[in-house]
Image: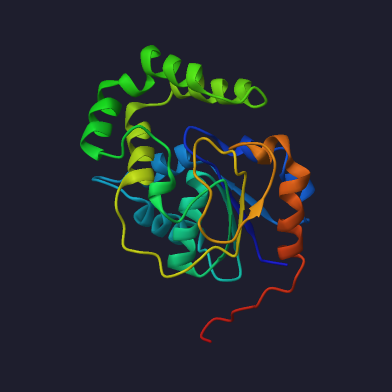
Length: 231
């Protein structure tokens, strides 16, 4: 088993997104990361991107190749960049290694900054529009709760998350150890690479946790290579 298993949530989520999944995973030292708290602790003075966030988290938690990082959505994007920096085993849930897979009206950072800094991203017009357009009855209440809760987040934190999603970074040289995705996901397109297809939508880890947990258990129950300092 790994030294630790880190859990990183997605855009406008928090660590409770893993509450249904975590009890189904092998016993381990779990470290849930709340990105709102991390950005407050980090206090970046300028622009950020997912690689700088991954570097901060790797340094903050001394993440090594003997650790595992599981990320949902934006958290999976952060996780694979943690692997780029640290060599940790990485599991992506409803996530991506190609930012073009994000299904969002725009990836233009100038526009996104204007929307975030003005408060329009969290305004009732846009949030009501997104909630009305959401296509899945099964996860509608969860999605709408996340969108409504995002109205209470600071504009700076929304902007930091949008930069994490869309700011360009150097190409990855590593790949996830496991990708789990629902083909019907309306928020993130399915990977072009091999992945485990599960039922549901973007929130399969909440509504089909047993099916998401199975492949993770299979991976984690295999002996992981141990990397010693200096070797």
